[in-house]
Image (cartoon, rainbow, N blue to C red; front, side, top):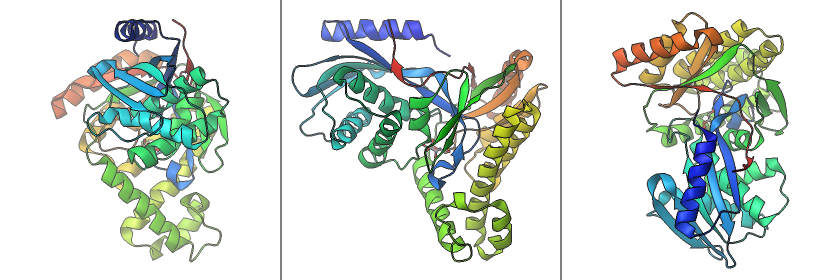
Length: 390
Ligand code: GLA
């Protein structure tokens, strides 16, 4: 997507201007796109995201005291706090992600040093590509690099999630932080969101991962997200009366669900059906990728979108238009909304040779119907968080 070398040079120059010295480290954490497995992570289920080549960078250097000075280059705003008493900043709301991570790392008993940092991002905000997870993981990585503490990568992802859940107050699952930490170049990650075991799955050769941003920024997402979580929990309560050993929707097979679905109220039934079938689709998708069957993979993406639209009801007109426009292009294996929904992006798997056609035709059709020019990116599956040189 963007050019990393330019972004690094800008972060470095901004740090020098702002703090009058060179940064000691530059930490990077990527955004993500989820290929399949949506709204399954908080149901102990399976997801298949990739880390992408857009990122948050943190140029940082330690301070001798325990204060933290943050400068957000993209909105030219600054926020400072002491590690002795980390409180939310109501005016500079953006800094609550970094504050929350500082709080969560200290809660873990880690010894943090004060720092000065410049933060810059080319992950579009509010577009479903996990800009917030990338922000959390980038500052956690910066602290890890500067303070030199040991921290298992999965634990680091969990602490970033804790920052978002308990400090920022957004009730997200683990997928976004997990892939931002553990992503691998040219691979998707199959994550079991219960055990947090994961497996690398090579992304298919000859096909591109194309992200199309509807430019609709997610509005309802927080309240609707929490409502879906509650509905899933209600489904678990009802299903466990009939099926033994059900702790989460992950424990219900499609066959068991078919036997007991009638007992659930209609809305709960649809929510559960999405999650249970989506978990099965992730398994199918991994098998399809394994044998290079992109056509089947694409069919599963399409089924996932329809289920998110009709059963889970987290799509919106813009996402549906974008997805349908993609399916009209020859060489598109599949397409679906990605992320929490209610706006943001679709992801499509497109034969390399058809990418140009996709860009032109999907953009034209979307603009003709919605009246807004979309952004279309070809993504590269990239590495998870770490230090960058520059
Ligand atoms: C958001 C959340 C994730 C996940 C997705 C939906 O991105 O942060 O944890 O629940 O929505 O799959």
